[in-house]
Length: 296
Image (tube, rainbow, N blue to C red; front, side, top):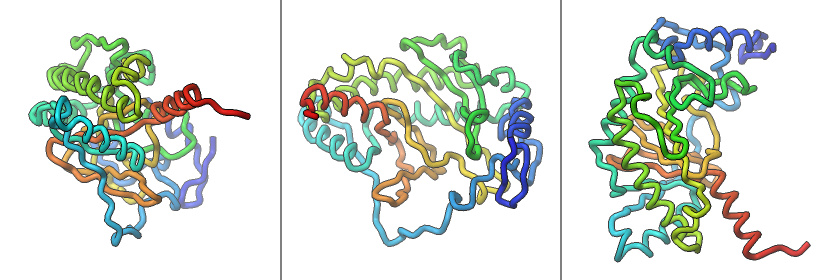
């Protein structure tokens, strides 16, 4: 498959992608090899690349919701804030959510330790087989996407049926992942009830749908890029999942689209970013159709 790069030259993208993927070293492997130019399939079209901000004079602040008191006096207030943030932004930051800062910090450190290992260690886990419950890879859709790749590697943990043997985790981050997921599963139950109430439903509605029964943990890593002006760590997208709970480090860089403007999501110590996924929106529409009905 020949494609045209920004320099106007054609190249065999499929061949170069396969050669990169066969190294099983990811973009961190490229960095470690000392590359000064990124492979062409990482270069995004000029019209998609970052430009100088045109909304410097516009104040956009992603909602910050304090979960303290959700079990009693502040529950209705919190539910209302979640409803408003979900409807207007589709995102909000959450504090006092029950996950200790120390657990969050160790999770981030565990991810860094894993990805900074020698490629010979990581490549044993490199796989594009979605049936593997724990796998390391670069760009999940690398071999199928028609667009440019993003400058990132990942290790993914697929907790099907809520179960995954910690012995299958890489030893270097085993304890961190186990502790973090223990708290996230508790938070999932809380958010399921609050989101149900924000939708105007009984608190057990989403749980009864079993929409949040399967957890997946994807730990992204963005190594320093020699040509950052030509690519993205994560390009524009929406999450197809039901709900995303995102742990962001102090480096930042996350943005969300709000009213046709890109708003920065600043790092807040101890906060988690909540993203309302495509599936929960579709589920709500289906519920509305069934409960209200339409006449054609």
